Amino acid sequence: MMSLILIAVHCISHLVSKYDCTPYCLPMLKKLLLPACFAPITIALLLSACTKTPPAPNADISAALSSAIAAKNAQNGIETGTGRTRSTPPPSLRTSFYGSMIESYQTLDAKKKNVVEAGILIPGSAMEEAIRTLSGGNVSLPVVQLDLPAEVKKTTYLDHVEITFVPTAKNSTDPYAPGHFAFHFLTVTPEQQNKINCLLTLDVSADRFPDSYAMDKPGLPPNGDCVPFFGNRAIDITSPEQDLVNKPLFTHTMSLQYYSGRMVALTPLITLEKLLTKKPISMPVNLPLTVGKDTLFPTQFTVTYDRTKKMFNLAFSEWVTMK
Image 1 (cartoon, rainbow, N blue to C red):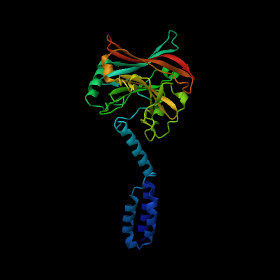
Image 2: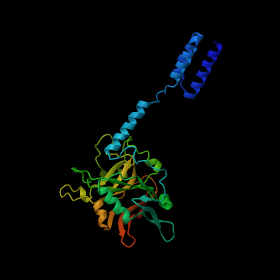
Image 3: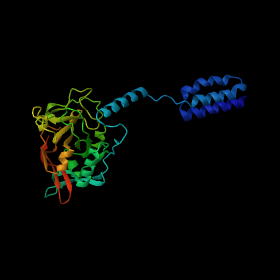
Image 4: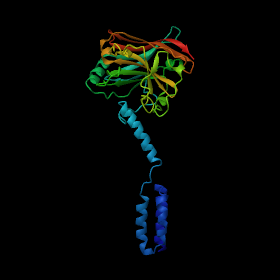
């Protein structure tokens, strides 16, 4: 009998340490008081109890949070768990985009000290393939991120780039319903971008907005029209598509993204049709009173197409010092 009890005690020790199942195993200690003839049953009961998996802590809270984020993602056309994994930091200054390599770049002044221009280069073949694919109803644009060169990150308000695509919203009165690319020039690090989960309040002071800008759809619950990883969009109310009388068709505009009290991205929006014309695009970048730090802030954004090199060039330039 003593041998069988020792075997049972050994089993308890081993299983408790392996499965951390103390809440399940301790009640079984009483079984050791049973007669020796029941020792095999005791061991069987211990094995049954100790192989149970304890409930995960705060499982209901975690599930609720995951459900809320998934619902918000679905609302904004982001399929949870598919293609939204971000590398930290972005992979490099070059990455693949529809069969070609795109890259970020900087142009410095003659003294190689000050940034004159910062942007991205996209081969015409890649842009044409992207537009052909996305126009055909395939809207699963993979995450496309580019780091920006060192001097840009060090001296300007820009940090890295992410390209997303917004499909055409059918039967919509939204001025931005036509399918378009959003070229997000993030002003936060990838680590900070990953924390934009739309659970914090917008809470942006008026001096962080340019005079002609206002939040897009601020009344939507729970926090305006917030998009995970990018925040809330502010639009230029003087942009042509905002003319509700003449209602000109949206082709391009400069939008700004905000989250938790600050501007997190400068985001030019450009329709597929506008890019296909390969004609120059120029957009002013209106200045807020402050961005909360000493930095260089761009005042101009351009898109040009080099027909010799067959290359799109999307660039910010004409920098001013901000506080």
